[in-house]
Image (cartoon, rainbow, N blue to C red; front, side, top):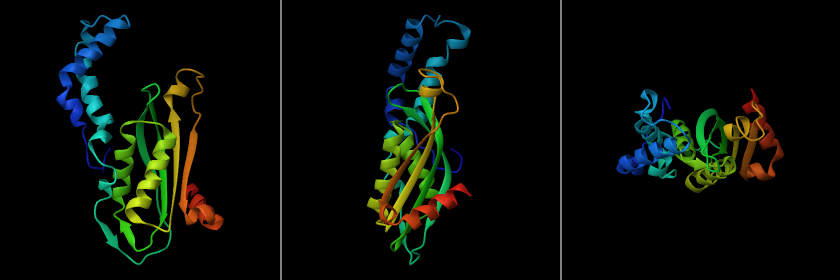
Length: 197
C-alpha cells in the first residue's frame, strides 16, 4: 500500500518452492493444463503475491505504532478512510474496504501514519472482519492507554458477493468501542458525524 512500510511474509520466502508446487498441483486438480503458456508462471506469481498479502504474519501489530509521544492533547483524534485488503479465513477470498479509527488520548499519541501501518499489520493475514475490528481497538488500548477508542470497519466480501448468495455491493459494518466511547453517547455521535463528513 502506498505510503506505508512494505512488509513481506518471511515464511513464504523460505517455503517458495513447496508453495509453488502446491499451487501447480491445485491447478492440475481443478482441470487446468499446467503447461499452458498463461499458467506456466502462475505458481511463482501466486507465491510472490502470498508474500505480500500475508505479510501481517511477519510483524507484531503492537510494534508498528512505534514510538509514542507525550502530548497533553485530550480531544478526539480521528484517522478515517484507511483502505485495507484482507483474505477471508473461511474461503481464502478477498475482502476489502475502509477503516475509521478515533481515540481520545490521555497523554500519549502516535504518529498518524502509524495507524495505517497498524491496519496493514492486522489485515494482511487470514482474517474475519469482526476480529480485525477488535484487534485494532484492543491494540490501541494496550499501547496508547487512551481514555477511549472507537473503530469502524466497512467491508465488501467476495466470498459473499461472487459466490454463495452472490449479493454484489453488499457491505458489512463492524464497530469496536472501548473506554469512554462505550459510556458517552455524545462522544460516539461526534465520531460518527465526523466520519460521515
